[in-house]
Amino acid sequence: MKGTRKPQLVVLGAGPAGLAAALAASREGLTDIVLIDRDFELGGILQQCVHDGFGSVHFGEVLTGPQYAQRFIDEIGRSNVEVMLNTMVLELGGDRLVTAVNPTDGVVELRPEAVVLAMGCRERSRHQVLIPGYRPAGVITAGAAQRDINIEGVMPGRKLVILGSGDIGLIMARRFTLEGATVEGVYEIMDHPGGLTRNVVQCLNDFQIPLHLSHTVSFVHGRKRVEGVTVARVDERLRAMKDTERFVPCDTLCLSVGLIPENELSKHAGVELDPVTAGPVVDERMETSVDGIFACGNVVNVFDLVDYVTRSAEVAGRGAA
Ligand SMILES: Cc1cc2nc3c(=O)[nH]c(=O)nc-3n(C[C@H](O)[C@H](O)[C@H](O)COP(=O)(O)OP(=O)(O)OC[C@H]3O[C@@H](n4cnc5c(N)ncnc54)[C@H](O)[C@@H]3O)c2cc1C
Image 1 (cartoon, rainbow, N blue to C red):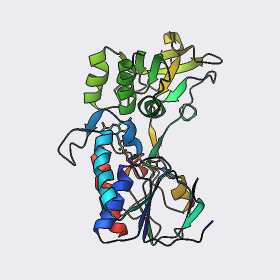
Image 2 (image 1 turned 90 degrees about the vertical axis):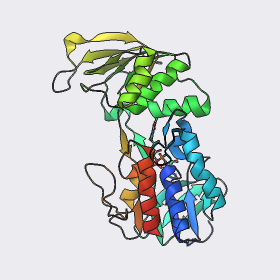
Image 3 (image 1 turned 135 degrees about the vertical axis):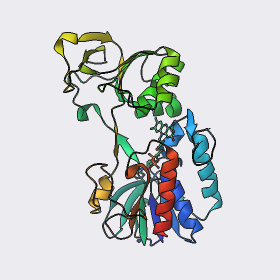
């Protein structure tokens, strides 16, 4: 390991939040900014969102995820921001010591004057929503399925049930259908859809994919690979009603059951988290409870639109500068 570097600012995560925060700090005159991401390219989750619907507020245009990200990536290329890709941040201390690792440099330590947290969020898994049954292959989260199809070029299944009607589940119902798979239905435990109306219309209704409200998956069948799921209507306390259960054959159960801000690093640094949002408590400059540590984007709060992620990041970048 080389000695500890001391840049002015380190931004953790290079999705739309990290990109906008680094650029805002650079525009404020900082000259030594390091932007770190574990992925092989800049842009975060936007690179796998090939559908349109991004940028209507920030740019007044409707863009795809990669198009929206590219505008910021181009600007990063023209700026003095140093980018470290394929670099996983392992630890952040309350004294702002960042420990990261990558295949070229091994373990890297940086102790900047300020840090911006921009690690985004992660998807709830099957175990967090307690779906009983066997543990076969073929249970996948919607974001992972999206990455498989749009980035890795792999189809995770051919006959699907989707649990959860948030925007990612709706978008993936359409994506799977466009790729030739059959989506048996989207099952939603609440009595209303979780996603935007435009996505219910454009992703389900336009493709005749049924949406079953007040329903859940009560059992996963199959030893090696998913063979089907039991679905059931739920009562007013959201419990599956036995007498409404029916078997739906499928080879894949795709979960879209919520997102949680990604704050393992923040917790280790002693950052105070809000029990409602599960993200850091921040002030009007997006500074957290720890001096010199700022936060923005989905790490703070899961935003519906990326445009507001960018807005929060610009405040954090200026605050950190
Ligand atoms: C399927 C889907 C559809 C969407 N559709 C729309 C839409 O139509 N319109 C719209 O406006 N918004 C949409 N969004 C929302 C939008 O994409 C997000 O709001 C936005 O990407 C969040 O930005 P972020 O930078 O906070 O997080 P992310 O984009 O998730 O970026 C976080 C980055 O941090 C990195 N990271 C995390 N932990 C570490 C670590 N320890 N070390 C190094 N790097 C790390 C990750 O690799 C990632 O690159 C959609 C999102 C999804 C998932």
